[in-house]
Image (cartoon, rainbow over all chains, first blue to last red; front, side, top):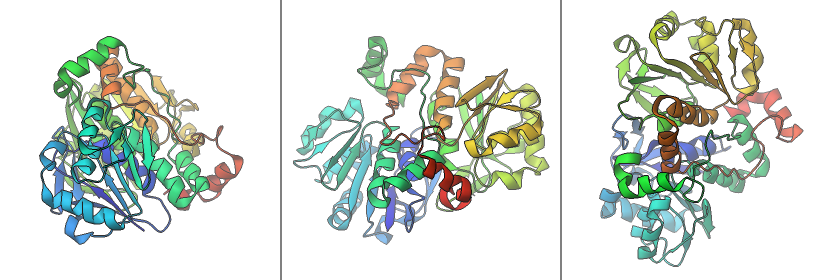
Length: 211
Length: 211
C-alpha cells in the first residue's frame, strides 16, 4: 500500500504531518511525500521546510492520497500539473483525502461533484462552487473521498483511516502509541464554541491572524 | 522572541510539528529549527525529512526551547554537543520545554533535578533517574520547565505556551484558526483508557509496534 502526501509551496505543516503521523506506521504501507518537483518545500510561515522525496509523476497510482491545505492552495487551483495528477490518482486510489483547504483542490480537480465534504470553517461555503454539499462535521466520508476540517482535524481523519485500512485494534495501538488523548487548554476550537469576538477577529482578518 | 525547535536523527515528526504549529504564529516570534549541523534531518520512520535552518551554535540564547522525542533520543543521551547546548540555552531561556521522550534529554542535561515532569507513558519511570518526579499529567509546568506526554500532547503544550507568552485571547485565535476541536474516533489515548490488550501489546513490543 502506497500513501502519497502532497506538498506545495505555502502548505500548512500540521495539515500534512497530522495524518502522516497516524498513517505512517500502517503495516505494509510505504509513505511518500510528493510534489510537482522533488526537493525542499516551504510552508505558509516560511519557517519550516519539508523534503518531497518524489515528483508527482513518479507516484502515479497511490492507494491513499492526502492533500493538505494552506494559503498556497490558491495558486494551485489552476495548476493542471497537480489537478491532472489528482484526477488520475483518484481513478485508481482506495482513498482520496484532504485536510483543511486541501478539499478545494479536490473540488477544483472535479472530485467533489455530488459529494458531501468539509474544509476549514472559513472555506466551507466555497465547496458548493465545485458541486459539493458542505457539512460542518470534522471528518466527512463520502464513498472513497474523505475530507477533514481545519488543520488539526487531519489527525482525527488519519486515525479514522488507519482503522479502515488496518483495523480498529491497530488504530487504537497508534492512538495509544502517540498518546492521542487531547486535552486542549481552551475550548475555542470551532466557531460554535469560540467566543464571538474571537470568531469575528478571524473572519474580519483571517489572513493576518491565522496565517 | 526566538523559539528554537531542536531536531536530531530519528525524532518523531508530530512531537516537533505539534508545538511548532501552535507557536509559529506568535506575534513578534521568530521560529527556527536547529540541529547539531544545519541541513536535512530524517525522522524515526525514515520517510520524513525536515530541514534544520541553523546549527545549535548559531542559536545560543533562544527564549523558548522545544525538544521533541523519538527513538533517536537514545543516541543523544550522551551527546555533549546537544546536552551542553541545552544547559546553556536553559540558563537564559524563558521557557525550556519538551515533548515525549524529549524530557529524558532535558533530564540527561541535568535540567529536571527536583522538578515535576512528564514523558511518553512508556518512559515515565525513567524520569526518576534524573532526579525528577514523574507525573501522569499531559502537560506539566514546573517553574520555567514545561514537559508534555507522548507525541500528540505537544499540541496541548504548545497552545498552553501561546497563552503564556501571547495571552489567552491570542491562544484562542490560534485554536480556532487551527480548528483544534479534537474528536478522536477511538478512546484509547492513554493507558488508563485503552483496552488492556492494547496496552499490553505496546508494553511488550513497543519498539516494533509504535516505532
